[in-house]
Length: 358
Image 1 (cartoon, rainbow, N blue to C red):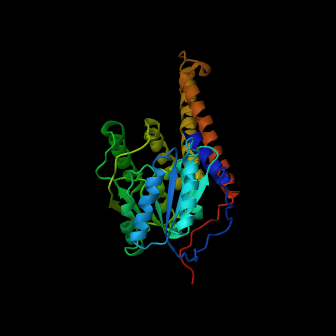
Image 2: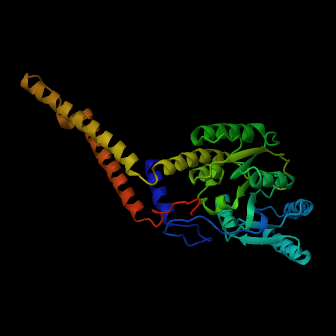
Image 3: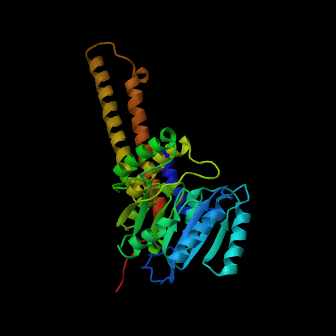
């Protein structure tokens, strides 16, 4: 686990997403002064949702028209094996013909995951408010006007949906989801009941200043909080039954969710100063092992001085355990030292988010 965390620090500091490469700045990130004239960007990641896309588009277009929003829909096809991309191309032609909103599409060559889809969608979003929703029709576009109001009028940085009443399987999905969210609230300190809800609203500045990687889309509120966007709200939203296709949720996602949460907590706490973790634990292990070696050796010398038969040090298990602790302590200390070298040579070592300048 420790080796995996250390590798995560190194890997994600130097490698961007394949298939969606954007040049990172190696300087301080100044306040985003760009003014967006579009009201809403809707980012829809999808995988094998060809049947639901036409109905979803019509639903979104109707809500946008009734509320006089200027908008764009960004469909991110995450390596679907059905006709999803062809449907997106047809919807774009339809939207261009009636001049109602804009449709943009991103098609991955293979399945990279929801985090990669959101990352690429966020990079091109031009709306003042960015909405994310799933393509399976379980998220209602009718919630968009109120989410938009909470961002623009109530001043929230991020608003997460809460599917208080769910129509999923209670044993295989609802119960694991409740356990997961209870743990996430304790670890992150964010009082959300449904942190992994796909229906969320963000100020554009938020999505431009967070990096969603690996499978961290579950913890976007935590990523936003770590970036300094602390005004996070919640809204009860309607949950609809799935009409087409099958759920992609499985127990592997539930297990991976806990591992990702621990990884994100570790990276946030020690990502910039790995020596504070590895160096401390390594030093303690080395000290305990060193004291244990002295104690075992002293007991051996005392036995010899008394003429009492004593076990050879080479056959004493305590001696080997003590030596092993000293070796592990040195290895952990060196891991922290290498982590510090990697951080010092990272292009993002001096990236800071500035809210305002005068």
